Length: 116
Image (cartoon, rainbow, N blue to C red; front, side, top):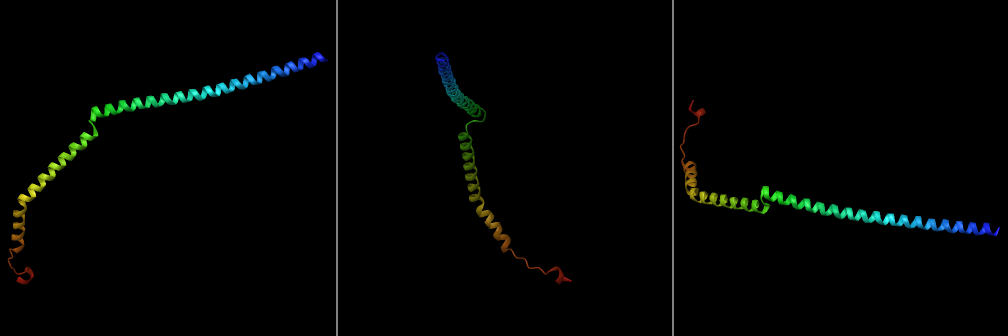
């Protein structure tokens, strides 16, 4: 009977040790999965940054930088505005004179209904 009791005690002890080892293995597995997920996320971020840099480089080579385009557009706009202002100042007097001539040149005529 004493030997059975000792055997049961040994089995219980072995079962407890096995459960602890399984628990430790599960913890290690969860830790490793978490670590792998973090590493994968870092790799994804690095890849994304690399592809973004390649895209920016390609975009700049094909389209030129946006700053260059904006400055070119702004420069041409300024040139056109200056051109319009100079044309307006040159032709202002002529246009005003023509307008006044048309408005002030009154030729009185009878209305067609009154003529009959």
